[in-house]
Length: 146
Image 1 (cartoon, helix red, strand yellow):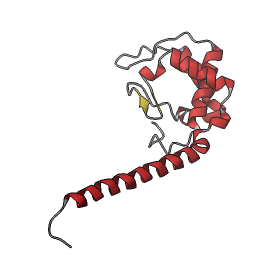
Image 2 (cartoon, one colour):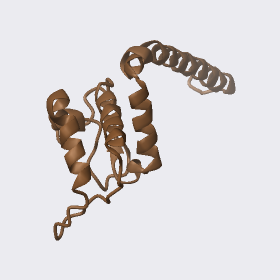
Image 3 (cartoon, one colour):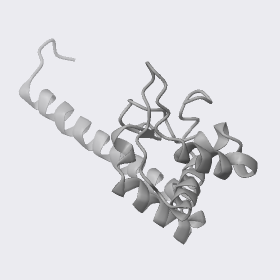
């Protein structure tokens, strides 16, 4: 092997490396597209979930809360709030009561504004948050309290 690094050697490394990493990228893209349907929980999406997402967007909940790691970090992560607050047995009553008593007005504590949502809208948000809790996120958030 020669002691010098020639232009043709550099070209071969450049093109060979480019082709290799392009193939790796395409393989990872294919793998992601194949596993996405089973991870996304799309089969469980209902009309209530869609309405809940609409309420979520109209009230800019992501402006304060994060959902599955995306959004603002001013208020708690809500990707696992369904699990934290009682799952099927207690989540909807908890959320209904929580939304009614806002703002809490506790001195020194940030509080959520009162959005004056109907019971149906709160139930729809509850369904949306329940749906998001079933998405396979590889254990995100890393702890139960978000």
